[in-house]
Amino acid sequence: MINLKFTKEDTLAIKGIAILLMVQHHNFGVENMASAYNISCYPFSPEFMLSKFCKICVGIYVFLSAYGLTLSLKKYSSDTVISGRQYSLYMKTRLIKLMWGYWFIFIAAQIACAIIAQSQMKVYFSKGIYQGIYQFFLDFCGFANLFGTGTLNGTWWYMSLAIFIVILVPFVAKLNKKYTVLLPAFLCIFIPRMVQSGLDFNIGRTNNIFRWMLVVVIGVAFAQYDVLARMKSFMITKNKYISKIIKFVILTAVLVFLYLARSVCCKGSLANYTYEFNDNILPVYVIYYCYEFITDIPVLRQILVFLGKHSMNIFLMHTFIRHHFLQDFVYSFKHFMLVNLVVIVLSILISIALELLKKAIKYNKLMDVIIQKITLNEQKRCEADA
Image 1: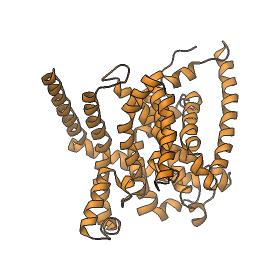
Image 2: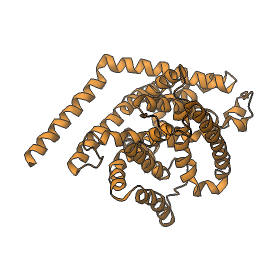
Image 3: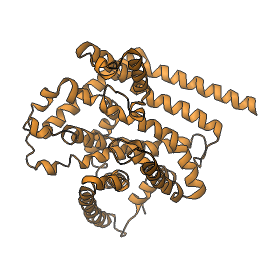
Image 4: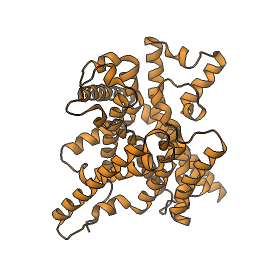
């Protein structure tokens, strides 16, 4: 067995893959844009562009978020089980880090939309000034999806889920250690379905945050027990090359089978009862498959890591490019690969510009100062309690 580690760079590479899946899904899976703009899918058929399948990007992001947050718990406790005081510090610092990047783009987008389209009046203030302020505040806090209120960018629904993950991970980590992963996994399957039967939450619907609870549990467990590295290190034979070939044949066949299974499970009302597989188990398998065979490819790895570094910004603003402001321009390139490339390139260019602006105004340094003060205050409270 080879001793490996799922590193931060591996995480960025997987994020790079996820962002490519997201762009493909949003460009051609959410709306029928291929037909509307007469987009060429050559050499594939529209059905074989895998646009719907690419929605697994959400599960991939949830897994990576839970994985990374679990590792961050080791700053407080080696076994990832933290105390109430540590949880308070964890929550404050992680939420600030999560929201800091979102707030910058949120404000930039508000300014751009006010100048170009005055979208805020339609999104927030169509029901009056007080309702508008309320909806604006919830969108700023990332709660629009949770409360079902207006949002300037439909893609920002994920912020509600991201906040939910931050809150949930320490509890899952504690349950995993105390009762094994089976109990939290059972709860994350059982509770949403009980809620669904008792209240009209429609757990299976698109973008409901409860449908990704199981992959949070899996992400936490994989981080606690270093499962990805163990799986990649495992050798079927003593010859590493032969072992790699055998693993590739077997795991690729399984991937094809899972893809075909998902295409069946996502049809009609069946999708409401199979989302644990569609959006939780399958994304984890794809992560492992990419980690095993794709993220180590020279040059490609560097490209994916670069995309991963900008993935948060791309996620937050690509919808403005492909839908709000430059839709006709983007889809004028007439081939799906060119359309995706244009969206990615424009998003990266804007992301680079925003990061330079952050650096110029010392935006991220301000975040570091705030987190440092919070940490010092918590340490003083701990010393006072002692």
